[in-house]
Length: 184
Image (tube, rainbow, N blue to C red; front, side, top):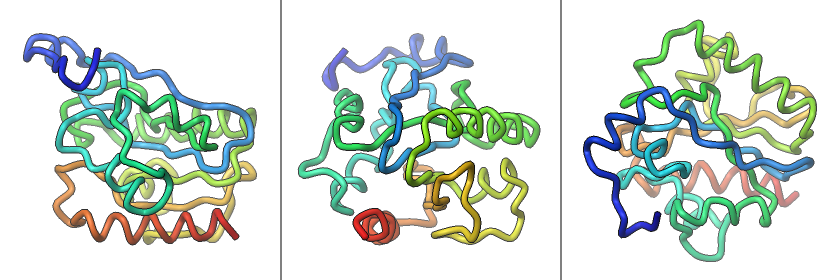
């Protein structure tokens, strides 16, 4: 499927509970961790594929990629030293459809991945999901005080178009702070 081949409404509805495979490798520079896949992403099988999602524009604008990648090029990130995963694997229409227990269990599953993969940084994309899943109710955006299974832990705004608290320029600035830390 390509960007021009958009899924039908029926295909999107049928994606409830489906998953999108992790794009991971050992010793990545950054493992970007979304909350969970959108129905659109699960329907097409690619991360951050929903048309309103700003992840790919943000990565490029922050300097992680030389050009804006499409969701259908998500596998190219691994060659750049970056990976993609989610706290919760199952797709939903909105992240607020997840319950607290799912986020805590997802964090525990993420811990197992990190022990095996040993990325340098873990970037969790969503403060609310981080606070709940990692049991850090007072966490703020940016670098966290602790590491998580050896990875430097960073919390970034969720790039979903549904996150009206952050405009594209705000997202680029926040993600750029992570890139600067990665490069030092």
